[in-house]
Length: 189
Image 1 (cartoon, rainbow, N blue to C red):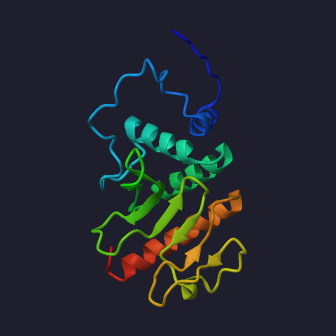
Image 2 (image 1 turned 90 degrees about the horizontal axis):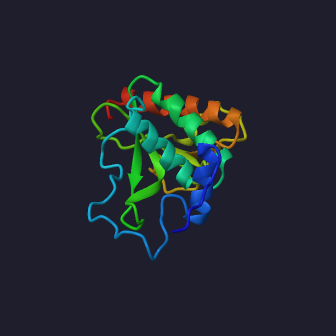
């Protein structure tokens, strides 16, 4: 039996696991077969951040997907602030193509009925953020962190604001609040 001791912060361990796939997996020859039951993968249940299990699932997801601990920290800071907003919910995206059934992004929703879709998508992998805002919705924003997307007319997701810096996290939170207010004022949640 081979024993390996790996030390580090949760962020460092998540980065190490993401790069090597070593933590949590035994030797291939001695590992037990994978369980039949799939890992829960953002099946419509919002993450509240209050329960210990939700907290651990969120951190594990973010830092397991993030390219670097710094990216993971920025994404986590953004998500924490969004979860502190009244009526906002965060959910892990799903993917049939990934081994664990999860995509690399988190979705932000208004907590009301979901007739309108997500107001934001944030990538845990690279800190990219796409918002359900149009160029008219951000005409007053002069920050260079805001990038307009080249999309088909009628596409409501015209704004990117990567959460790559502390200032960008602040701006992203403000724009997410704006997107939530837009959805709520239109009567579509």
